[in-house]
Length: 238
Image (cartoon, rainbow, N blue to C red):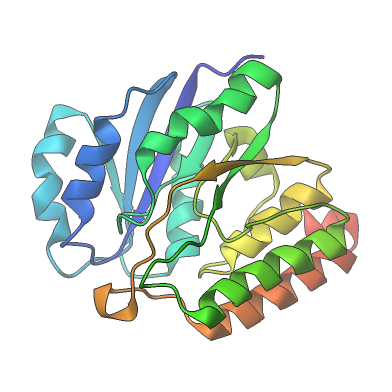
């Protein structure tokens, strides 16, 4: 059945400097589907929600709150449980991704019958990129491609679009950044083909609040390996 709506989940933790700007950019995009914007606050303490009170009151944004900080994965899992759209995707509040890319990401689904589409980042001459950051991302994509007999360029991308029912079926468990590797492994174990569409990307540095660590990359390698060889019933259930 052709999807008619999409939920964009925005996990938020202490993003006062960027949250309002990120939502204003998103709401300005002319989407090809009815769109629910769902902000999941993961126990923020910096008052960032004060900057979007008017958007929540007008109904432009729906807000749910976690009682305490539990990690990006936990916030995303809450968003998946709460979403009303036929499709679901994620947009971080840190301005690294451009929401204007969403119509292009949806095109393979609406026009070509694709089910899962990832936004593929390119790594140009941006000052915030480090050698190991780029190599780490490429290594993870190669590892996933090797393990699952696929060809993927970017599995850590935030912009992943898939049916909401599929996000729920794969029963994600990770609470931290490992959820990116987990969802890719589980989509592939479920027999899904992942289409990739080029997107724009502006990486931010540590001084701007970048939270992911090299240890998250190591954990992602292990998650992909474990899921690849787990019994099918265990790989796709809680």
